[in-house]
Every structure is written in structure tokens, then in C-alpha cells.
Image (cartoon, rainbow, N blue to C red):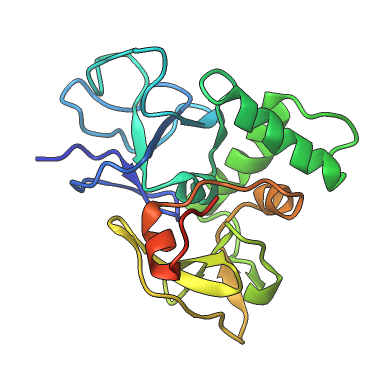
Length: 215
């Protein structure tokens, strides 16, 4: 039986068989010794996105007292759920993320990890707690790599079209809705995408678009 460690774009954690292409964590341990999750699904605001492999490290999942490993379909999903690139295993991408924010003048000075955590994971946690009302925007104003929801169904924006999300991958492209949609990607992350940060998409979106790659 699969562990409950697969994250959807809304930030909820599920038990499904698909592993995904990225892993990450939420700042520590929030699972019990029997590998089930505690009521609160994070340990801090340090929500990061990691490589599946890094320097040959290997570990058993959900070891007692150690951080709770999470898995994502792709980087787009992880960003939307409220995570940011890790400064250890993804340092180049983490620096690119900060550069994109500086290009948009989101911060007055180059932000430290703690400031990003407060802004990005802070918004995600407030949403999961039901403390913030959904924000509705025009899908046409969202950059590539951002995600939105219509009737509780998540879609990613790429090249002027909407791609429905699932744990298996993306579905066939649809026209972007004309009516307002619920923004899922945290606002600071949306600014990074506007600033030129190009996240990694799952390969399914490239196949659907007839392209060799998507970032």
C-alpha cells in the first residue's frame, strides 16, 4: 500500500502509487512511527523542492523522527503547492528563482530563505487552514508554469493554453477560460514566473504539445 506522501497542486497530501519527478519536505517530521501523518501536514515554513537523487544519498522513507519525504508530479506542482527550490541540492535553480524575484522588484534586497518561506509557504499554509478566501484572476494574465483551478480541478498554464493536472500527468490542452479562475500558485511564485523563472514540467505536457521539452 502506498504511503501518504504525494502532493497535489492544492497542497494536500495523498496516498497514490505515482511517485513523481521531484521530492521535497516541509521542514521536518510530521509522521508517526507507523508512517501515517499527523493532523498538521508540515513542521515549519521551510517547504522545499529537492532532486530525487543527490550525491548518491539513499534513505528509507518516513524514518522515525526524521523529516517527512514528499513527492510531486513535477516542479510546477511543487511550486503551486507552496514549495521553493532547495538551496543545497538545487542551488542553481534556487538562485535563479531569487534572481527572477529581483527582476520583478518583489523584494527591496536579495531575499533570504526565511523571507521566501514566510511569503510562499505562509500563503500556502493559510490556504490549507482555510484562513484566506480564494483569489480569482484572469487565466490569461498568469505566466507559464502557474496553475489555477476551476470547479476544484487544477490546470497549468503553458504557451497560452490550459493543461488539466492529474497524478499521472497532464491532460490534453484546453482554451484558457474567459471567466475568472482561482489562482493556486502563491503570488510571490507567480512573480518569479513573470520574472523569467522557468520551472520543469512533467514530460506529458511536451508529448501533448508535440514539443521536445518544456521548462
